[in-house]
Amino acid sequence: GGVQSGTGAAGLDVLGDLTLVRSWVLDNEGGSFAGPDAANRVTGTLLARETLFQDNENDGPGGAPVVVGEADVTPEDCAFWTNTSGFAGITSGAGGAIAVVAPSGSTPANAQLTLRRTTFAGNTCATPGYGGAGGALFVSAGLGGAPVVTVENCTFSGNAASVGSGVYSSGGGTVSIVATTV
Image (cartoon, rainbow, N blue to C red):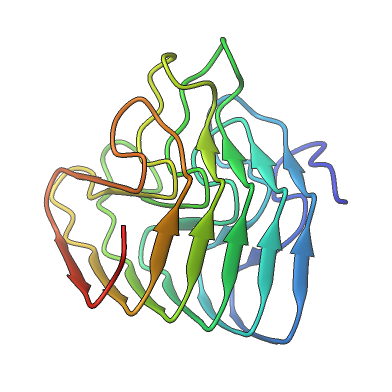
């Protein structure tokens, strides 16, 4: 139930290494339309096992979390339910559950994101029709970036966006989807 009120993240702001096991990351709200502020943000290393990310909301990219720059994020046996990115009718969203983005327009995104046995359900980008991309997962390399995203044995169901309701990727990098239901 954190609310961002300045620079930083409302809930998780991972700059170093963090491991979550059987945890809940619930109802955090980022308040900036642009910039580094977030509901939950990872610029370091995050390993999450058997963790629920639910009802997190960010006006910018990544409802829960936004993965920035060189971050290394691995959710295993997790669930991302009803997270939102974008502010309905005002800003378009990117990655209702997870967004991989560059830290700035001139810096590349070279993040590593590995999703294993994880469910994405009911995540949205603002209001469909307002330009949101990647209802569950959004990947953008930025200028010269090459993020590596691996999706193994996951399920994407009931997510919503104007384009890529499940997954949206643009600008380079590698996204591998194996044994996954979309």
